Image (spheres, rainbow, N blue to C red):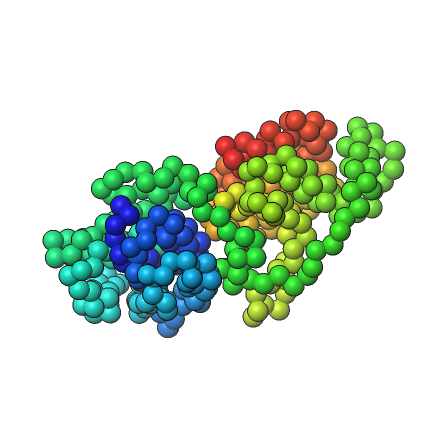
Length: 349
């Protein structure tokens, strides 16, 4: 599985799986000479993914140009003018890619990205080449972070242990930029405010909850320092936008385990509609930054009964699975061992 010299990737709207596959194979296979990126062409029929290809190439070049000297840059790009049309997909792959291959090519197609039609017909196109050239095939099981080869089975059980990406690299891969800077929190004040917040009968009304994200970020960094990406831990308060956007969004707390992203939204409020709105927001933003397998956590001032309903409604109404969104209320926060265990099982389990 590591002796091929040409890696072919199908690039859809989320380039993270392509990065994971390329990064993994570049780590173990010194024979890779070319990476071919098949993507959709922007036209009246479809949105193009040339920008995703550009971002992916920039990240791979930054990481590997000087380390993997046999890999040729710029990477080859193959655009498909109609990614729903089988005849178009096959004819353009054959004309723009297959006819340029020689007998020395040992090709590996990872058919994770792109449309279902792209994956199916690209697979069939290369499958028919077996015999004339060497062809291998693999798929990234995103739900379980596994790489699975057609003829070999499971290549790696948990790619999060092998493939790491930084926060800045991750948002850039998806076309975002950060435009604010880190600020130093007052942790003594943060701890004091947190203790007041979790009191069963608070003696004073707390006006805002900015300190809560500081507390959560610091606590999770301490508890999970061996599981989170080195030197970054849990980051807090990133304001993010795309260059062509007129607005931005803010992420309260962010965690990275390998390449798996978890976004956390914090509020001391307990109004159900407001809390649910924040749940929708963090689920959307986490997917935008970390792809379909990103996870989201909502931490609120809701009591146990309301938090159970909030969890149930968020799973149903966001379309997320139970394993992709977690709601924690103030009663969870009163027991540190409990909420830390819940978060650990949710992210790393």
